[in-house]
Amino acid sequence: MINLSTKTALVTGASSGIGLSITRTLLAQQCRVIGIARDFTKVNIDSNLFQFFSQDLTDLNATSELIKKLCKDNQIDFFIHSAGSGLFGSIEQFSVRQIDKYIKSNLTCALVISHHIVPAMRKQKSGRIIFIGSESAISAGKKGSLYSSAKFGMRGLALALREDCSKDVINVSQINPGMVKTPFFDKLNFRPGSDSSNYIQAQDIADTVLHIVQSNPDIVFDEINLSPRNKTLDFSK
Image 1 (cartoon, rainbow, N blue to C red):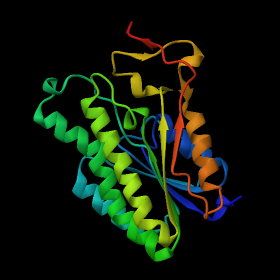
Image 2: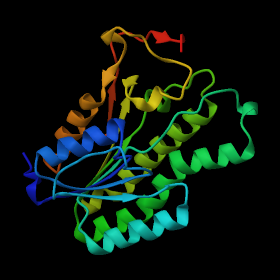
Image 3: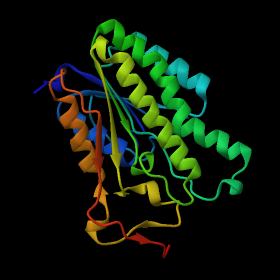
């Protein structure tokens, strides 16, 4: 089992939901965490191992400059990309501006961050990259044109990077959760059914991330799918 007290993780979406759970779980193992999210005003993490940066990932130039600096100033051992949001509806419902912004925040930013992270990890000859995907990266559903496009795209990125980077001891994984009980659903018109069999917890994903980063670097977890036992939705909001 890898000792995380000498490691540094970069976590996007670190202020809420899955990303926040991952951040707290890694900090509990004495891993240093650099968190990136749009807004940290509601987050209270009292740890000298935690450093955070408020950044709108859709600003690709600013995001690029931030990641470039972080890679220069730190050895990033783990990159965990958890940032993302849900936007559902028929494709004709969305404006061109909405489509552009959504793909930037849910796919393009992952490409831009990887653009800097991968060569830094190649240079140090080690690293793990973990993308938090979705069951919608495997099977698309109604009203999911934007969401599935982004998630399928990120899954393609993960698959390609895995092939490109393995000889440099960079392991790339994707975790595809089903319904997770998080603030992800706060602005949507549906949510998982109230019974606990209809959702998984953010901590379940954080525990999976922890298992991956503590594992032998010669082991690659290609894809892990996590689903609740049932999949009932509640549209009463």
